[in-house]
Length: 302
Ligand code: ASP
Image 1: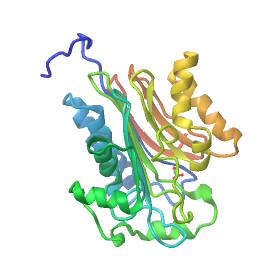
Image 2 (image 1 turned 90 degrees about the vertical axis):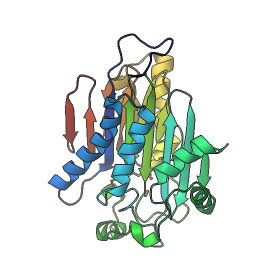
Image 3 (image 1 turned 60 degrees about the vertical axis):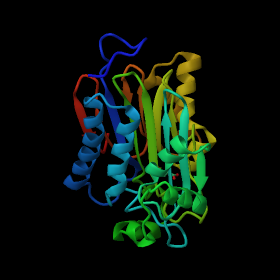
């Protein structure tokens, strides 16, 4: 049993977690494999929370599981850019301290979220990009792989499809632990066919990823450029902080800005009481959660 910290509630908080595997037009059939993959990632995070572990560890474990699964556009199975290469982005944020770490446009790090976390915990910086990030990861003994590791035939097919709405598969997680700490993590291969060097919203603190114990933790997915321009994840937190909005209201309103700008996507979010919101305005969003009352959900469409 973890000793009670001064100021922490006498009755332990109930933990909760939500994950996503991307929003968009879900091309191809949603199979039992997709649901099983979401369940596995959810369980990887939940196991940690249930044992009294930290939300930061839970979101890391959930995102690693999704990065390792070739069904999603993150880690293995990531999208191809216009040059037929992979450039991956990821971020993680700790709601207790507002520390954050991120990598952008990396091509050799097996689990970009682990590198993001190492940058947060073991460097003076928030974000490293490209070769510098890979060199840092190598020195931190984080596994590097050959570019071929990320290859999947499905991602190759998706990269030649012209409609950008057909992209989906970015992954993310948000969690609240029993100590009342929030955390968020997001990982992606980005938009299929993107220009080399393009960085999306996922690794940008406040755009695709945000966590602050005072308000909420958010992980987004969708039209990255619009998430950047509307500072989506921070907008959810700001609406709660400055307007006193509930999580659900703030998340819905922030997503409405994306729609007004002509785009789509979705997000998973959790507040400090463990309330969850998972709105999306695309045809589908891979998502799953375990709520503070212990009930769970795994869903793709509305
Ligand atoms: N938001 C991601 C990006 O722009 C893509 C996605 O979520 O599908 O890189």
